[in-house]
Image (cartoon, rainbow, N blue to C red; front, top):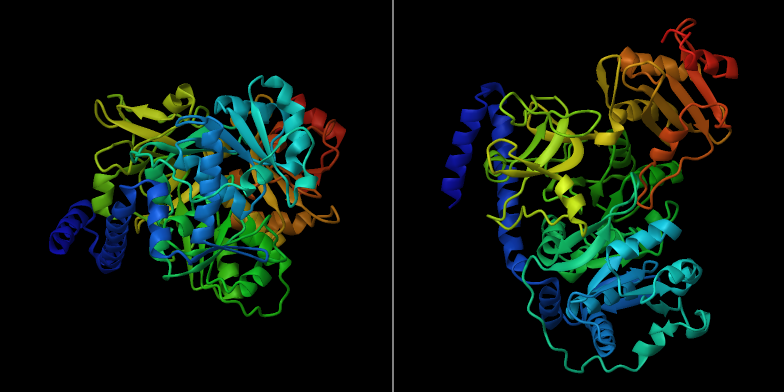
Amino acid sequence: MWCLVAVISLLLFIFNYGRWSRLLNRLGKEFKTLRVYTLLFYTVATKYKRSVCENFDQLVATHPQKVLFYFQDEIWTSSKVKEESNKVSLYFESRGYRRGDVVAIMLDNCPEYICLWLGLAQIGVVPALINTNIVKDALVHSLSVAKCSAVIYGSNYGPTINDIAKQFTNLEKYQLPCKTADEGLSGEIDLRTELRNIDPYTFIQKLKFRRNDVLMFIFTSGTTGLPKAALLSHAKYSLLSSTAILLPPNSVIYCPMPLYHASGSVLGVGQALIWGNTVVLRKKFSASNFWSDCIQYRCNVAQYIGEMCRYVLSASDDKKINHPVKIMYGNGLKPHVWRQFNSKFGIERVLEFYGATDCNGSFVNLTNTVGSVGYLPLLLKFLCPMVPVKFDRETGEPLRDKNGRCIKCRTREPGVLIVKITNKFGLLDYEGYTNKEDTNKKIVKNAFKIGDRYCNTGDVFEIDEDGDYYFIDRIGDTFRWKGENVSTCEVEDVINNLIHLNDATVFGVQIPSAEGRAGMAAIVSDDLELDTDHLLKGLKENLPSYAIPLFIRVMKSIPVTSTFKLMKVQLRTEGYNVNFVKDKIYFYDQRCDKYVLLSLDLYDEIMRKTLKL
């Protein structure tokens, strides 16, 4: 088996590349990654064929006293999780809930959260994990699009639920008091009290699940519109949680992620439910408590997402921290933060990955290459194509050649990543959203031949000379200025190096009669002061002229999503309109080659098109 794989990989490599100067380096990477991916698929296959509930039952039977979760001063073994989830199954079954019903969960991080969705899943009820930050229209939309029959919510979210309750005629409401029953709101079903006296060992009819049966709904962040409910099957849950294969056995993993997000409930909690590792939960992420928590619970692995590592860096002083963490895994770690974080805290390995709840492809950095999200062996490229293709900057749709086929990008050429949809291996099925129209929008048909289908990830990637994949931007974040493509991530990296870990985000703004969009940066400064001369000097030294932001907005803070990604939509909408924006805005005036304060007169010149840009 291994000999055949090695021969095929070697032949594919020589046929496709033939760059003998890079042969040894690429062959080493090829065989290392292929070996790990083969082991991963082989190991996952044993879990993949069973439902999440069946995999968890097997874990409980094998290791009944295994500690799965630490939360504050609580210890939750596999048996305890099973007992509590059984109570949930029995209660909701007695209330008439059946396979295919949907129940929303809006709750802060805690072990009960996991028992709730697992207990619902055991009887075929689909849990919809609601972002605890949304209110009013976004919340109504989320409950409606998922067709929820009921909502389980923490009593601290009672006012939020009551605010929209009148818009639903048949929505049952179950509140879970934060600690004791008397903290809840009167007139609602107190779920904690209801579950207290249920015998968890009462017989529960075990359901048969197919691997593609829906396990849960997880919502997109909604930064570009209302949240979409993405389907997550039992099989995909097991696949996405397979990071455990790359971790030491019996790892203790620090997970400060929100449990309504896939990073928390799948990539974090899945390490415990499917693979039997121990996961440390925290109610909410705290940069100042990150290392003290890891030390207290003796975590050897920690999760991150988005800007989280930068916040931890900023919150740490110069003293050396003796902590047990050796491996970090997650996504969204920028190269300059990556290097500083590893150097300062002695992290041995970073497993940066790419994947999305609403996408059918994923890969992971197995070679510790800074900035890369992974390398795909040639055999896997052939079996499971994930291809950057040229795209329209305005619509985000792949461009086609004269034959109507997508155009593959060259080395180092940014393109939108499309992933082949196939059920041949059961790993690249595209599950989509509850809304069929939203699902169909993501599918690219006849991409390279008649009848094939690919998923448009909406993410811009490039592949370097060594075959490493690099995430560049979301499609909506890239822009074109003076006939050139500008990567906001590249500009943000340069700015972050110049301003030392303060928040900064870059986006494109429209200017009357100008083609494309001009660059604008929003930068956080506690005292609202900025050395624009130093900034401009650094930008000139590190960026081409067309990529230098035309506008700089200085702010006290930049809004972030609940998964610590900087939000650009509102900033892009506000733009550089000094009649509306009260923050300082600087304009790069090329007449004097300096950033100057954008005055009303200067703004009027730009809008009247009398200023040459």
